[in-house]
Image 1 (cartoon, one colour):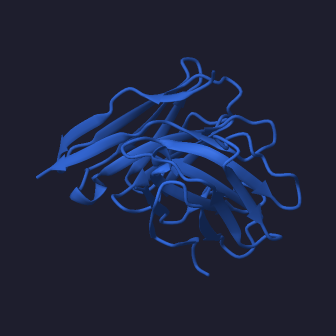
Image 2: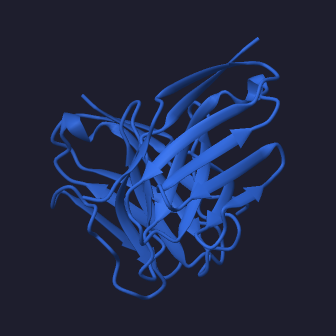
Length: 113
Length: 115
C-alpha cells in the first residue's frame, strides 16, 4: 500500500551545524505535505508545510524542499540548537478532498553540544 | 480554549476494562482526528470527523474501538475490553474547514497503559 517513510531513524548533529531530515513518499496523488516536531511527552507541533505546486518553502530557520520527480521531501534546519532535539515526522495528504494525514515513522534528531 | 485539550493525560487500566478518552478541539475547528502512537513509532490514523459528514472510521483497528463527536465540539474515543496491545498514546487533533497554513493542531495526548 501507499506509505510515507524516512531514510534515517536517528540523526546526530553538532550545535550550530545545519540539519537535513529526509522523507520518501510513494503516493503521487499527495498534494500537501507537513513537517511536525514532537518533543518528549508532547503532541506533534506544526513546523512548516508545502503544497505540491511548490518545490521550496522557507520559514524561520527551516526550509522544506519537495522533489516530486523522485517523491522526496526534506526538512533543513539552519544553525541547529539544543532545543531542536526532538522526533521529526513528515506527513502527507493524499488528496481526494479529505484532510486525513498519513505520517511517517519519524527521525530522532539529537543535537550535541 | 486556546489549544486542543485531552483528558485524562494518563490512564492505567486493567485488561478487559473499558476506557473513555476525551478530546476538546479548538473552538471553530470543524475537523477532528484521533491517532494512536505506540512507543517509538509514528502516528497511526484511527478516525476522522468533518462537520456533519459521516466519520471516516477506516483506521479503527477492531470493533472494540469506537468514537463519537457531538456537533463540532467534544469527541470521545472508547476502547472496550482493553488489551495490552492497546497501550499507547492516543492523540487528538483538530483543524479548520480548510488547511490554512498550519495543518492540524494536536493535543498532548492520553497515555494509556493496560496492565
